[in-house]
Length: 195
Image 1 (tube, rainbow, N blue to C red):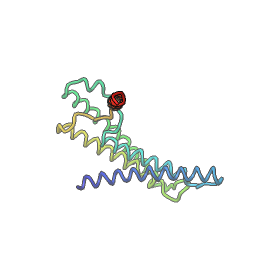
Image 2 (image 1 turned 120 degrees about the vertical axis):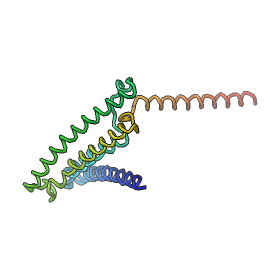
Image 3 (image 1 turned 180 degrees about the horizontal axis):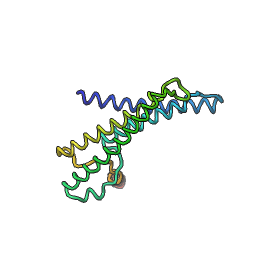
């Protein structure tokens, strides 16, 4: 129950970011090209919304397995080796996120100490850029979750999106639909020739 609510809130937040960014760009384009005016803070806000969407969405992508990965070699290995290499990859991802998390902490603490505001909005830069900490912390959390699932045998790997397999599934569905349509045409032409 709580997990479903959290999932829905997470998806709603990502949707809100995407819709807000799209509407802001649309309004800005209409105002700029239609009325020769614009919103002076629109570009900066669009960049911030995009940063929040990308960094927050990256952790969500790990959670649902939406990232594209190259795992052809790993899939050829035995199950234990797959799990081992997945844990190595998770460890490398955690190190990567840890480095960025540390760098983000240093950057944001300096921005807070200096007190710099955004160029076009009266908001302190460290507040607007806090997604650096939030996004990489969430990404680390997702990788820790994945590592735990691999250790406890709940998952074998990252479960990346397999575009080739998805494309082949679509091709099979199209072939089945064409075969069904051909069979219906044949059945209809047989009925027409009998009457």
